[in-house]
Each structure stands twice: as structure tokens, then as C-alpha cells.
Image (cartoon, rainbow, N blue to C red):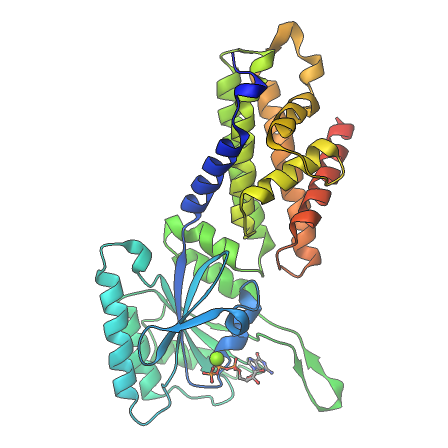
Length: 366
Ligand SMILES: Nc1nc2c(ncn2[C@@H]2O[C@H](COP(=O)(O)OP(=O)(O)OP(=O)(O)O)[C@@H](O)[C@H]2O)c(=O)[nH]1
Ligand SMILES: [Mg+2]
């Protein structure tokens, strides 16, 4: 019979974090287009943390930089030099990079999707851009992004016709446009670009892409609901044994893993102290911190329904209900905070407070 003292909370958290991060993976996106078309602006509008401005850039070829940021499961390969007279050299450079990557036996090294940006201002597709799209499409799904969209006037259809190898062509406005006289146009189609990209990202990397992007919070929610459903089923399976009351502790690792999985899916940069902080918040009800063992005993006492457990047995339905309530409260808290923060991740303390509040509201409503 498991007792609280035998339970190594730190190990449980460590395993949960390792699994969640492994499950999430890391996605590689190549973005190409002439200088000034709005590549960096687009990256910052779509991904967490002002990615293009504050991320660490490292040259991987003469014309391509890899931009990464601690805690974000994304590499952007930013390609420049397309407008120069020697663009054929640039394309050759990008071609050998992408094809080498796609031949790598480790799929983590592959480029998973390419965005080729063409600005609507110029209303033309250069031979260089045509060659680039055709070359990239041999290796990766290509989405053509018409940037700085203001007035289509048949341009999108023309691009589609010139670039039939592109999976899709989408018009995007990354930032608000302000015209003389104060007329403005809000950003456009950012979520649509994310959704189109989601369709072509490899199955195992959809969580990474979901986590890194900041414009579609619903994607984060939908995938988190699936994590909760699967955790609830696992908890029910364990409890179906049926486990004695004091073994209710057996479902704690499932809940910790579930919280780590949801955190990873929302794109929070998670570590051991993060999990300890948010669970401590639940137990103290105030966002305060607690040591591992105190958290475990606190969670057990706090679990609603435990008091009504008949005959000292935690029923499968109770275990599933507890796990669901926990997970859904966490999703609701994160959704609220991410929306408030325009898609950017909140701090540990904000998460701990909001989670604890949502959870007590849910527990009280039962
Ligand atoms: N109005 C408007 N301006 C935009 C939009 N996207 C980008 N810009 C502006 O276009 C200019 C160039 O944008 P960048 O994002 O730096 O372009 P880039 O493709 O990264 O350029 P390089 O790094 O030189 O290759 C900036 O002044 C942006 O503010 C948009 O959707 N609407
Ligand atoms: Mg740039």
C-alpha cells in the first residue's frame, strides 16, 4: 500500500516533465522571401516571445539563420539574399541545405514546412520566387504567404496559377495598417495561416507547433482536452482495481503528467519548480509554495469526493471525475491568462493563482 512518505514527488515531476517535452517535440519552419517583405514581422505576429527580434540567431548557411528561443519548441530558418543579382547562388545554397536536412535519418533535423513570402505591394512573382517555390516543394510542404495584404485585385489567383506546387496561397496582414486620414485595417488571416500550417505539419509535431504559435488559443485548448480525457481514462483504469482509499495517491502521478502535458501544449516554459508552484497553489489555495511531500498529502486531502468515498475505496468514476475537474480547471485558467496576455505565456505566479481560483470555483460548484 503506497503511503505519502514512500512517494518521491520530485521523481514524479521529473518524469512527467521529461515525457511531456519529449511528446511535444520541436518543429522547424523555413521562411524565405525578399528583404523587406515582412518575414520578421510575420514571425513576431504568429509566434510567442517576439521570436524574430529576441531569439538567438545562428548562421547555418551563408544566407540562412536559425532562430531559436529557450522554452519555445520551434526553429525558424530565416533565408535572405533572394533579391540579389546572384539569386541562383542563393537558391543553390538553400537547396543543398534543405535537401541535406530532408535526407537526414533523424526527422527532428528535417525542415517540416516552408513559408515563402511575396508582398502584395509589388503585384508580381519574380522568376527567383518561382524557382524557389518549385525547389522547396520537392522537399517540404510550401505555403505561399502574400504579405502586407490590402487589396487583392486578382493577385492571389495569379500567384496560385504561377505557383501550382504551393500547397496553398494565403493573404496575410501581420500588423495593423494605418492610412492617411486615420483609416485603419486590422491584422488579417494570422489564425488562418496557423490552421493551414497545422494541416501540413507532421503528426508528431502538431503539439510543438500549437505550443509555439500564439494566435489560435483554441488549438491549445482542443489538444489539452484530449490530454485530460486520456488522463481521466487512465485514472479510472487504475481505480477500477479497486484501490483502497489511501492508494488514492496512485492517481497523483497521472495528474502531474496531465498538468505537465497541458503546460507543454500551451507553450509554457516548464521545469520542476513550475509544477511545484502550481500544485502548491492548489493545496494552499493562494498560489503559495510548498515542499513535495506536503503537496502530495495536501492533494489527497483536497481531492473533492474523497470525503464521500464509501467503504474506503476510490471508485473509477470518482478518479475520472477528479482528474477531469483538475485538468479542466487548469485549461480554463490558462485560457483566461493567455487571452489576457495576447497569446504570450503568463508567469508561474499568475498561473498558480488563476489555477487555484478556477479549481476552487469548480470544486465549490459540485
Ligand atoms: N503595414 C504593414 N507593414 C508591414 C507588414 N508586415 C511588415 N511590414 C513592415 O515592412 C517592413 C519590413 O518588415 P520586416 O519584417 O523587417 O521584413 P523582412 O522580410 O524581415 O526583411 P529582412 O529581414 O530585411 O529580409 C517593416 O517596416 C514592417 O513594419 C504588414 O502586414 N502591414
Ligand atoms: Mg527580417
